[in-house]
Image (cartoon, rainbow, N blue to C red; front, top):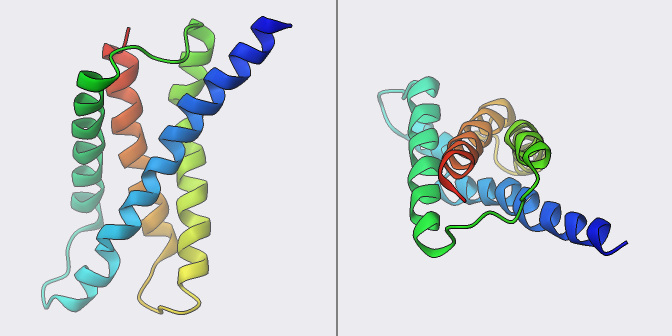
Amino acid sequence: MEEIILVLFQVLFEFLGEVFSSSLLDLFDFDARSQASSKPTSPWLICFVCFLVGALLAWLSLLIFPHTWLHAPGLRIANLILAPLGSAALGYYLAQRRSLTHAEVRPKENAWQSFWFTLGLVAVRFTYAQ
C-alpha cells in the first residue's frame, strides 16, 4: 500500500509540475507581441524558442534538483509522453478562455508553444536527472 501512495505522489509532483510549468508561457504572451509588431513572427520560430527555454529551465533545475521524483522507468517514459500532451491541452484550454476577452489570442498556437516548452523540459530532465 505504501508503494502505491509513493508512486501517486511521485506522479503528482513530477507530471503536474511539468504540465503546469507551461502556464508560464502566458506571462510572455507571444501571440499579442507578434500581432503588435509590423513583421509577423513565424510560429515555428516561437515554438523552437519555447523548446530552448524549456530545456534551459530543465538544465537549471538539475542544478537544484538533480534527482527525479519518478524512479520507475515505466513512469518516466509515460511522463515523457504524457506531460507535453497534458501541457498542450492545458495551454489550449487556458488560451481559449483568454480568447473570450482578448481576440488576438490563438489557442492552437498557445497549445503548440506549451507542448514544445514542456517537451524541452521533460526531455532534458529525462535524459540527465538521476
